[in-house]
Length: 351
Ligand code: PMP
Image 1 (cartoon, rainbow, N blue to C red):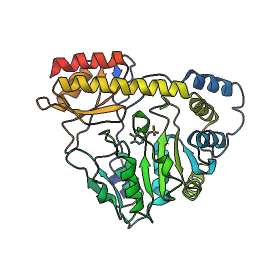
Image 2: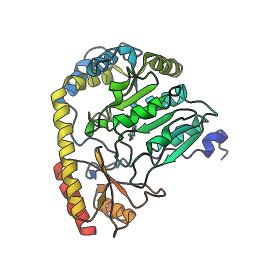
Image 3: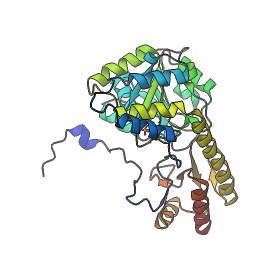
Image 4: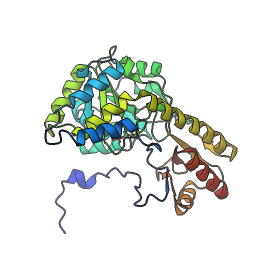
């Protein structure tokens, strides 16, 4: 059959998301979801909204949620942009701030959506190889031609760049936008949102999918100078004038209002991560210093791909990337303590 796609789409390898198995009868440690349910306040708020005003359009810019998020971080509502998951926010950011002919910088070994967006939006990138220990070579992100983007903590390694280094990167890119993708920052990192008043070219992107257990609700947001946010709104309005639906707005607001629940679950995940790290090391694994809700691991005497397959046969899903330099690593999401015990028991048998 004739394929009528344009040449660019034909030539772009699509982003390949982690498997979403059709059964719930498995231990799912492959897509960095939160093992705990969202705050009960979220469900309450969604039911309330369900019984209320679905007949009506939502606020086009999700204004009530912008205000909630602005209050939470101590910024103004016009410094917040909401999208359908941070993947969508990232797509709008690529369209708004990056230009053809001016290469952007991102780490070589990073979130695999960046190269896909780069190609689809006909941009150029100069991927910067990570150091031997997977840390980011900070100086190589200075003086970009077209802007900088990196996750902090990085994915899939979990390595965190301290805020001082981020400031250096931003200071050395005075005329380019620097985007910090903080999908995993709540698991022990420190957010660059506190720097946005100081640097008008800094955009911070976060998601409610990980630390707030709302991957299914699809809310991501960007925080930055109001001129950056205005640009994002201009691009977004050309695609879709209603940002997110009423149920998502209500649920997301409720999550920010239940701080205690948020703190309790994120602390629990950090504690489990540290315990699992220790146990994996005792089994001979090398474990990258992760400040995310996952660990990036390799074993000198085991083949990662085989381990991945053995675990899968036993109903345990972890993430394997068939890519140079990391093809002997596994990325393991931190689940509940019971899930991690089962994972550890099984992996003990295989190494
Ligand atoms: N950034 C990074 C680094 C991620 O790992 C993910 C999750 N795959 C996202 C952004 C997107 O998350 P979401 O679209 O669920 O907000």
